[in-house]
Length: 457
Image (cartoon, rainbow, N blue to C red; front, side, top):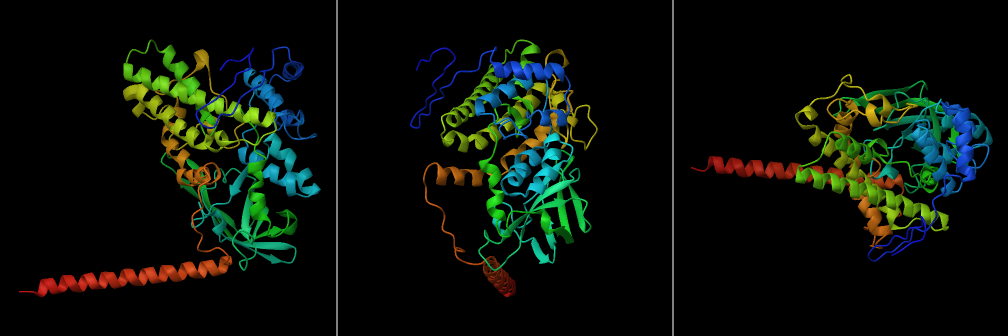
């Protein structure tokens, strides 16, 4: 269909959301205000960005500007044009801060929010466990009240950047005698606490990004519990409802790293693309990137109209993760035999723009850009990209969510419904024991059958 000016209606088969808003003009007063501030702060620190409200502009003052999604888009656009990046403290800004804002005490807000937004205090996430990944509510790490403290015992795994973090957001079980979702509490965990140790997990990039964190009688003061005891599962989901509408997350590695746009620009500048198969792949990559961008705009349009995001938001992760893998695979293929090399970075090191706590996450453009045969970020990204479809919810989990919440398909039967967490654990142990007994009987039977065949003349 047609539009008027810069207003573009978008539609598709079946579900037909409209994207209907005018992009702010260059002389919009909100643009001019950001430009004026950037002229006065050409190389702003994280603290300066935070104090100006540009780290979380959608938050109310004093932390943000009460910016609506379109105002956020303006700020994102102006910062990008100026080459200014917000602090790379994604877990702190995106997970910890919204939860502290919603359920934290005034003292917790005063103490932790400034350091989170400035990037001066890096945070990690202490959620997943060896036996509680996709079924996170089955977590077994215990938090037992002892006077004015909680004593924590257990372990967490896949904790990104825990070795750099000053604080972690921790969910632990405070009551095993209620259903699993109800006995969980939410804590702020100082990462230098006595009894807290960690083991590095070196992934196939040879980099140390992840950790397993162990709690051996770690004591956390009661005043570092966020919200009420037993309310941790609800708080763990608060961040999803407070997720910022971001249109600047075009990076191919969970919104970070080099984008399809950058790769295509690099390919163009190497000369004409004459290989028809390569041309098809480049075109397909551009189409994927454009579809993802338009989906983000649809989400923005829904927010501006006061509507909750629809299916376009639910499927975004699935599409974006596969797209990231396609970007990195094409980069390696275009580099040819040089793509087999690791690049110029030290082995076992995450390229600086991708490091937790990095304050600079921009990637060079124009004459300073580096192609995949020399820049280690491409090699790192290629080896890291399989994690995109695992972390943050596997494809199977994401498709379950889409099936249940978008397509209206029935949930799978829950045989543990109504059981307390402790009862469910006993049932699982009994089922495992019966399964192990059955396996042993089968092995014994097969051994006897084999022996009888051997004994036959």
